[in-house]
Amino acid sequence: MIFVNVTIIYGTMRKASTYNCVQLLLNDLRLNVNINVTEFFLQKNSSYSCHKYFSCLRTNSNSCNNFNPIYSILTSLYDSDLIILACPVLSCDISAEMTSFLDYLSYYSIQNKAISSMHNKIGLVISTTTGAGLFHTIRTLKRNLKLCGVDNTFKFAKTLYEINWEDVSIKTKEQIHKKIFKLSNKILDFYSNSHNLEAPSFQKMTSLKIDPIFKSNNVTDFNTEKNKHALISEINVL
Image 1 (cartoon, one colour):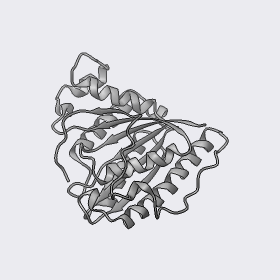
Image 2: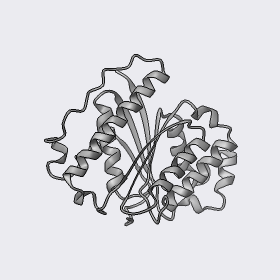
Image 3: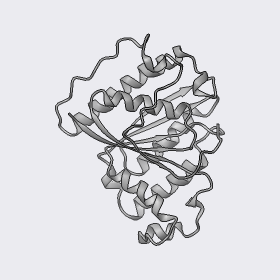
């Protein structure tokens, strides 16, 4: 069976609609491959604002307390096969935390000439919104992955009319799951072809009518094998 390393960068600490869409994708991937998942939740008012941070990146110094958490993210990214940027739309754009992180990721890639090592990776950007700004947010996330050397990026974007995932109708969740299932197969097909692997016989989507993950209008928590890196306590954002 194929083994895939996945790193996920969340633009907020809140586990709402965007987070749950990522969990659906991970669950679908597990139907066909073994995955090793590492998740990072970007923090608010983090060390990204440190004026010495760029000096740490230039020297790869691990003496700075602000550098170590970011370096662990960078290390995971360069060890990954699939990189997921997941961020809800906030004020018609990505979150401030994601903006800061992508600035540093771009600078680090260029400064350390690491862009070439990102060409063989697969990117995926995921975003949900209750209003405007979805197209702009997805484009920003994809553009930043491209800038860092990730040439092949998929996307999932959905406008929802409920703030909380629990309030989204079962019918809408079924529609989301069908699209995400197809997306997971596209990702695995691309991965198999790019690594000259014999493509597995992926499970086909039939019907989600009685899918148990939607019976209670909540998504099952598929976090038993993940390595989580929460950088601060949960914050309240839309």
